[in-house]
Amino acid sequence: MTQRALIPGGIVMLRRLLDPIDWFVARVVIAAMASMAIILPAQVLLRYGLNLSLDWAEEISRLCFVWAVFLAIPLGIKRGAHVGISLLTDRLPAGVGSVLFRTLSALSLVLMAVVAKEAAVLTIDQWDEPMSTLDYSVGFFMLPIVISAAHSVLHFLTGVLGEKPVGQELATE
Image (cartoon, rainbow, N blue to C red; front, side, top):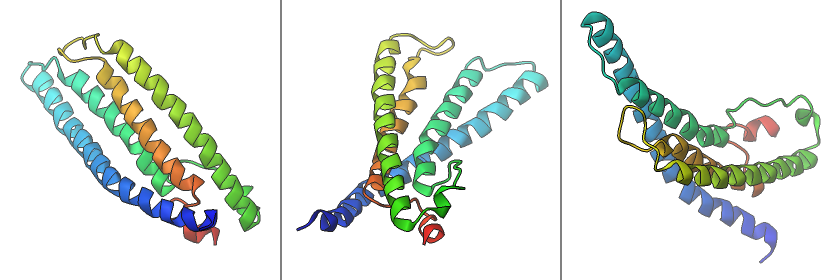
């Protein structure tokens, strides 16, 4: 079996792993955004309407925002939704463009692996520090960076194997 014959099977196996992860992460992002959409107006209503305040509302809202933003990054990678400049790459021959895409996917994979490792080190270092209003670790602000970077590594691996982001297959043909 040649190397070329192994790659499509590798993409299929990686897709089987990533699809349920993407589904779950998308639900976590939705839950985080919904929590913010409930907590912030409730806090405003309580503060300005009833002259009461939830001391934890700002910190939980910020935590939900951080989780939603970072967990959504790999979902954007999957769809090719992040900002990109394709003025030059659209004019390249298909073979050169494919090699460039795979090379940049490999470099991005390495970068995200380094981010995941360093964020994990920082999360562990900060785990014993409590949040100012809650008795939870400040590490919960760093944990989504670790998860996002590791999840992004898997999506960039699909790019290394030759799979284009969803919606870009037609644009390059």
